[in-house]
Image 1 (cartoon, rainbow, N blue to C red):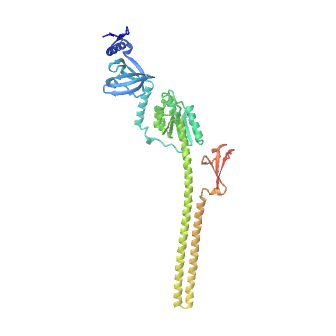
Image 2 (image 1 turned 120 degrees about the horizontal axis):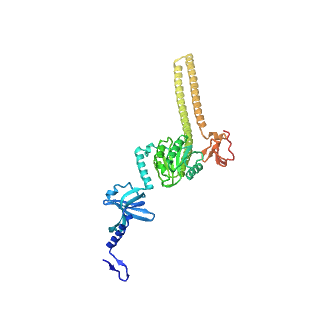
Length: 427
């Protein structure tokens, strides 16, 4: 029933139900609303017993959607953020006082299709065991040659700049390839195979940031299988922090960015140098301890030998004295002289044998002490030699330094700090 609103002439007041009915009639009169496709990104998705409720959004605009259970069962797998086209009829939901799209069908579009492809490939590779940690190879502690598979650009430049600054001793072999576009996955796989034949210790697969579509080549099967079959360990540094690809899942080590991959390799060398310094110090301590223990054992042995010799001599002298008394008591003097003479000879032999034994033991002890002293790593420094260090590492090749580098010369007493003026390669 229409009731004129007092005071505002020409304005009609209707009930809520009639307002909803009029609005529903408006939608029905527009044929385009009978079946329409609406594209957007899924921002909410709720499954209930009476159907599926979800929301499509586009910029700052949202559309409420509903699908009956029998229709929802035919939809593809939908995750939050998936781009779709929802087909259905616009209707007025009286009980919620809003309009909504009654959805009959949903199709993935754009990134949504790529996401579905990503999920299918992920499940396939998982079933093949490509993600198992047991099949992954360890990264060597001191890689001398690194093969960088990438396109020329910021990602490759960041990797090369970072690694050259932090670990200049590492040689980078650049294996160029396209990293996006149709067929890029096949070219990346071929580049990984070529990098494996280059003799590198490690392969780094890197590229700078980009859109989801630009980076999708790193999810495809040729790239994944090339990483799996590589005999060298493969490190990935693809895109920006937060980006993730199937290539990262199968790689032996996944880093967030190309710079992070370079930092990891540099840290391997740094940790190795620190460990070498610790082992060198430990070796020095152990050699000194071994020498001290050997000298202590020699002192103990010498004292024991001396005590044994003294006891033996005392016993022999006592025995000799007893025999002499017996001879004097029971035999004429000439027989005493005959008996005493052999005893004197035996006494002389015993003295000579003891002297030879002491001489042999003393020589062996001096030889052992000489060997231990010659093994002392600091002994050459007493003769005027020096150990030249750069960044805490001992230099063996002049080509490992450059003019301007600061070096340290460790002497027998103290050390000197100097700067390289010229490198002479007399090799």
